[in-house]
Length: 107
View 1 (spheres, helix red, strand yellow):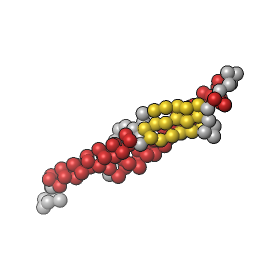
View 2 (tube, one colour; view 1 turned 180 degrees about the horizontal axis):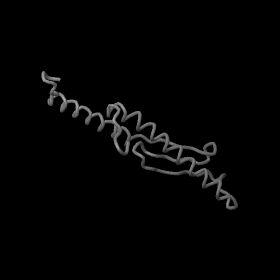
View 3 (cartoon, helix red, strand yellow; view 1 turned 90 degrees about the vertical axis):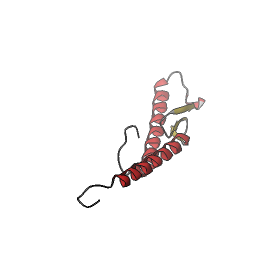
View 4 (cartoon, one colour; view 1 turned 30 degrees about the vertical axis):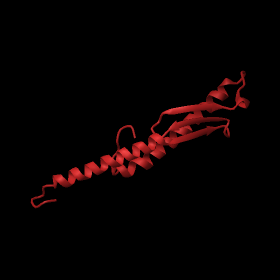
């Protein structure tokens, strides 16, 4: 701070620009990342990007049973939840340092 308790605006702007660059870098890394969630010992997998966009769901034919659709639905949902949790953890890891601990909506 300057004498009289006034913050140095030039320094604040420099810090804001640095944070903006770090956030952009983290977002680029998240966009390139792909995370996989699984359920049923790998019978169902879901792939999601680091930004939360689901890319694919794969189902092993062994788990498909016309008389037991509920189990398949549960496995798909579990794989999606598993992938989403991995995405949240990666986003926190990448965005935390870039935002200096500030919580940004959507990350």
